[in-house]
Image 1 (cartoon, one colour):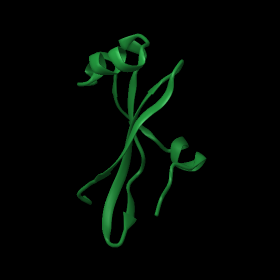
Image 2 (cartoon, one colour):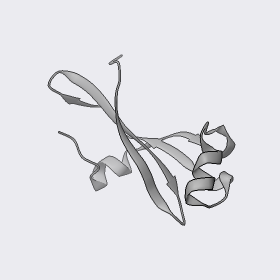
Image 3 (tube, one colour):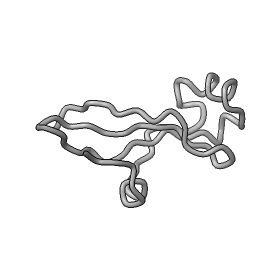
Image 4 (tube, helix red, strand yellow):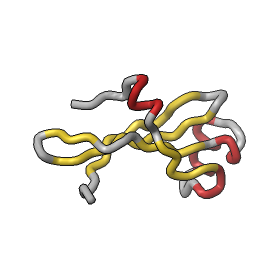
Length: 76
C-alpha cells in the first residue's frame, strides 16, 4: 500500500487554492489561518488489490497538513 512518503509529497498536485476550495470557511473556522493560504492537494494515483486510489489533503504554511483522506478513483 502506498503511503505519504517524501517522494509522494514531492509529486503532489494542487487541486484548488484559497476561495476555490469548497470547504475553506470550515478549515479557517476549525484550524485558523487566512483563506488565501489554504491549498487542497492530491497524490499521484496508486493501486491496491486492482483498485486505484489517491490521497487528498489540505495544507496551510503555518499549520501543516490536515484531513488526510484516501479516495478511490477511476483509472483513465
